Length: 125
Image (cartoon, rainbow, N blue to C red; front, side, top):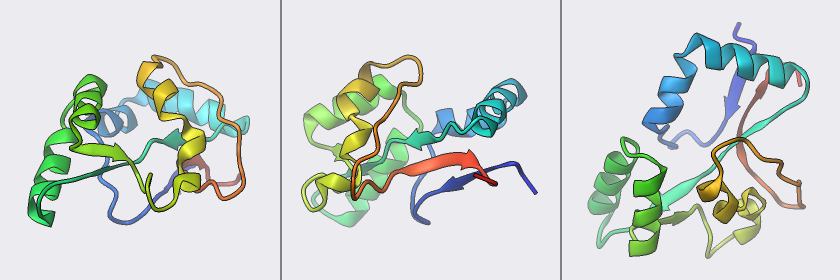
């Protein structure tokens, strides 16, 4: 019965910032208004790396509590990167992760063939 919905993989972990945003009535009202007008919010997707799946999962658990700066450091160190960057670059490349890391406000993303972003949008869109 919510006016907004998220389309994402079942195993995606939401960052602490996203959880806080959806619990902030002012932010939800702003997002709802924008989504009613056709805005779709793309959720940048990342994956983590380690010597084994337990280590990679522990890195992910740590990073969802961190801010964008810490995530950028994890990308530089090789602990994390854009989701499926090696096997299927088309899936998330239009998100433009370089722009996302620098952005402090939402920015426009151009759709491209085979783009499979994870998104928040109006349920009637």
